[in-house]
Image 1 (cartoon, helix red, strand yellow):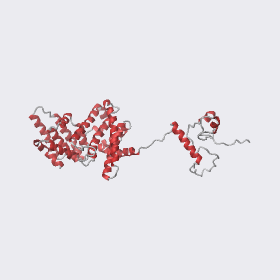
Image 2 (image 1 turned 135 degrees about the horizontal axis):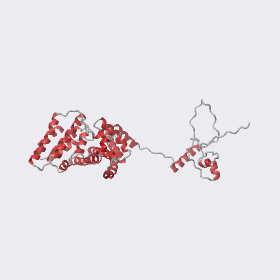
Image 3 (image 1 turned 45 degrees about the vertical axis):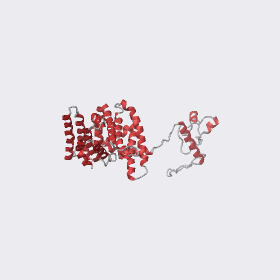
Image 4 (image 1 turned 180 degrees about the vertical axis):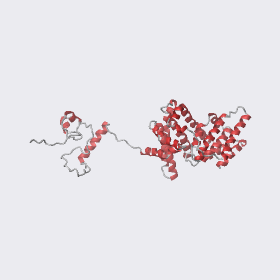
Length: 394
């Protein structure tokens, strides 16, 4: 009986040996056949952990467990040569991880997204659907990273650690990048980009409150009437983005964000009465001058009244602060810019709600600072109309 000599199958041979159907010794980086023929030796598949073995491996029983392979010096060189070839040909990559950015995404999922929620339904939208949109919209992802970094800077500040400045710089860098990319898309809002555009516009409003309040005089002027008017101007951009594709947004998975259903939390009587004061003052202004446009003020006061229950349901909620800023009528905004007394009186009532939300890290002393400035601007005959607001904030 003739016995065929057993041999080890070539499973990781080079492409030349496979094409010629000859046994390859799998030598790396060049097998013996290619070396003899002066051919370029190319391995199209990754090899085993060890590439060149001079001796047959001893057989082992099924009960024996394999030990971890040990690499000899020559084997290590072979591995390195293989990795160099793979890297240079681009057939494999070694992606790097940006741990800082991963930390910011985790911060968003666990904590920061809650800043934008007014109930559980809206919280779920901000937690994941917004983040999913960011995967296709880099400007939104930069916005998420920016607000999360700013949140971590506040935490660092409270804990007294030295990472505060690093997180602030990270936040500003991401914000600047996001704004540049966002601005490029503003003229071309469509169903394809309206979700991330609306989301980023909302982030920008909160970011503006937080940066002006947290960075302080060393980098910005801090909270002020002019700064608040700037935020209102920026906030109106949210409404403009939404209006471009309103029906699409309302019917989408972002729909809960636009379902402003007030909680059942009652508004204290003194606040109910407080809303009546600027309403009566608006009517008096019309009686004194028929050129006075009552409608913008009626709408501004109505928006504040509608959003007030959210503050009493959750004092640190940004729903009224951001919602009023987004919805403030354009004519009311123009009157604020020129310090019309009635506009300042309405704004003084808004400052009370900012003050109620002062425990929110984005808000802090905004309400009290702006209210004091309003009090200094108003003439004595108008200052009496904001006494209630001053009492609430004192």
